[in-house]
Length: 148
Image 1 (cartoon, rainbow, N blue to C red):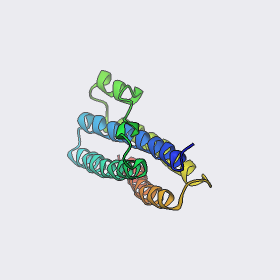
Image 2: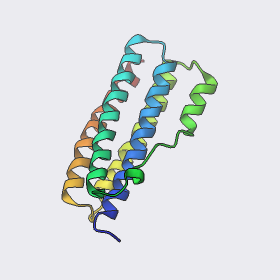
Image 3: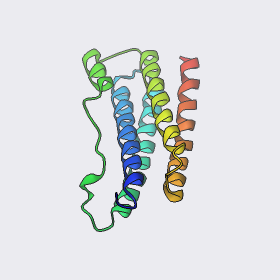
Image 4: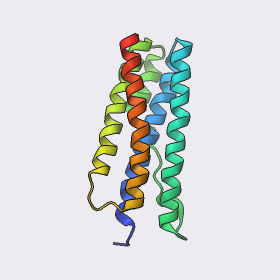
């Protein structure tokens, strides 16, 4: 196993989970009726894409001169996306509930990565910064859920 393989595997797992989360927000944004909810979802799409870019950049650095084909790409067959497409217009409350459930999954993925004692310091720091943003986003979804 190469020196950075484990870090790359963990980062790719976080990238895939974050991209799936971006896809969820993007689909929810299209289905939302309330302009403020749409705007919040759109902001979260941008924020999470930026997190993904940071994680992918780190993977590319760890790979060095290797081909970047080993950087994770999302599985766009997410059941969330197909549910939204099939139902088309769900209530904003239902969308927020589904997004919040996805936030729980994403937080768990990052939490598990951060609990990994074999993760290198720089990768742990990057994952921790991303996790802090994700916790803030999850808190906003919980607050929005209470308001809708």
